[in-house]
Length: 113
Length: 111
Image (cartoon, rainbow over all chains, first blue to last red; front, side, top):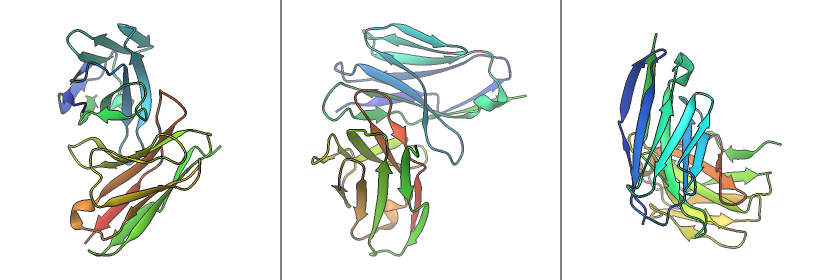
């Protein structure tokens, strides 16, 4: 089955700096790569996703890049703000087969003032 | 439109007790999922239902059973709870291949 590795497990940045979280996946059939943000005590919520026919996608301060050849994808947050502090999860999945997702183990991002 | 709802929010069980976690969605989604979340381990899939009438095992199915009661409802049952099943349980749903919407979670403690 699919295996998703996520790094780093914790990340501390100063407000206004950029943050980068990286994930690798193992199954070449995976073609959907979402990123979820989870605030303390809350449910995970989708912040951005990318499909394998696209190399990069941007939404305001958030961007995701995908390298299919190397089987890795990354989340980039620019101009970080204290409200960006949360746990971020990457995931990978393939069309069909119940539309399952395999999640990474999460990155605790802390944005310090 | 409530989205995905779960009951109960919190539960404490003694080892060996049984319970059912309930999940419902009002978005007419086809696929539903049960995950468990443990510190440092992300979200792990327990069982899923690709469509009404079907269920399949995920990554960590041992000790659990599920029922897709209808298109809206997907329940998770612990027949004989064990301390290793202490976790936060999330239900999720999706209409097709794309965003999974999560419920608020159930925090379960087994003593």
